[in-house]
Length: 138
Image 1 (cartoon, rainbow, N blue to C red):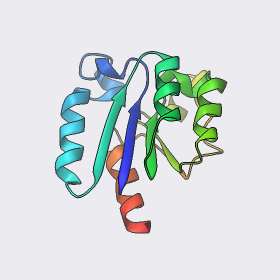
Image 2: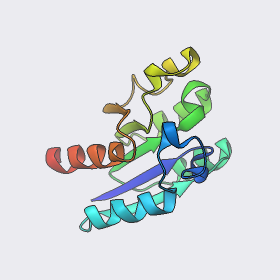
Image 3: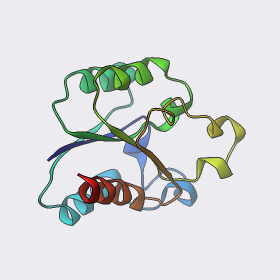
C-alpha cells in the first residue's frame, strides 16, 4: 500500500510556530514517528508553501491514498480542491488544531465534502488516526 502525506503552507514551521495550536514537534520529527508506527506502508512525504507545487505533486501521484493537511489552503484554494478531485485517489483531511474552536474563517473547508474523513484537534496523532483507519479498512 502506498500513501502520500501532504502538508501545506507553514507546516515546515511546526515546533516553532504557535505551539499552543500545533504542538512542539517539528514536521521531520512527526514524519519519523509516523514511519516508525507504520513500517509496512510505503509512505511518501511532501510539504510545500507553494500552491502550484502541491497541485503538481498531486497530479503526478501514483498512490492508493492521500492524507493531506492543506493548512491555510483549506479555506482558500479551489485550485487545490480541483487538483485532488481530478486524480480519483481517496483522501483524508487532517488538521493539527481543532479548526472549529478557532477563528471563524477557519471553520469552512473546501475539501471536507470530498474527503473520506476529516480529523482535527488531535495534534500529530491526527495523521496516525487517518493511517490506522486506512489500514483497518483496506
